[in-house]
Length: 206
Image (cartoon, rainbow, N blue to C red; front, side, top):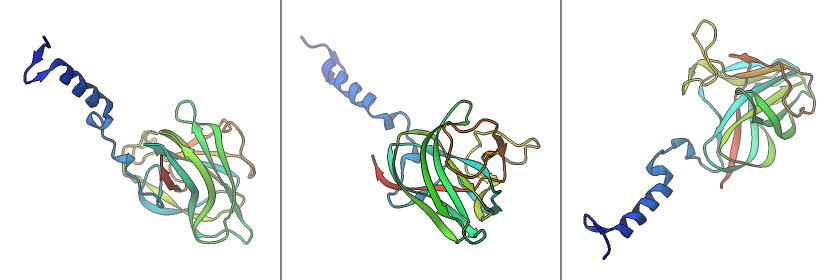
């Protein structure tokens, strides 16, 4: 005879348990998985201010990806362009050791940095769930949107500044403008102010 457990057979209960285990949202629902295709998003967001980029500095901004996606743009928002002919270069690095950028995933090439608005590099890059680093470098000093470090919308996983008034928002590294190295150069320092908000545009939910 088939053993009974309440009103269901043992086989019924095993099937129900298997379906429950397979449904990850039954255990941990992550609202960061909710994304709209055709829209930009960034790794962390808060009240935005403006900052002039320092020429010849790699600025690395975290990007938390909660589900598999494909992106078709990497962008920065420039509020005041650099001198005529100014350029910036955008990239994506994989996460390395101790929350520091690791291997180069994509060098997205140059964008003009002498205009204003959303300035984007066109890409076709699949990203799986995890932490990545969006990186910008410029040969000039365009003014860009940045996160106001005291008002990040989730607790900083990068630690607090020495006086505990604000959180760190990324890394910067004094590296000459040009093609990106693989891996990310050692010697970067945590920063609370220099890192621009970098965003990616979602092409598809994979």
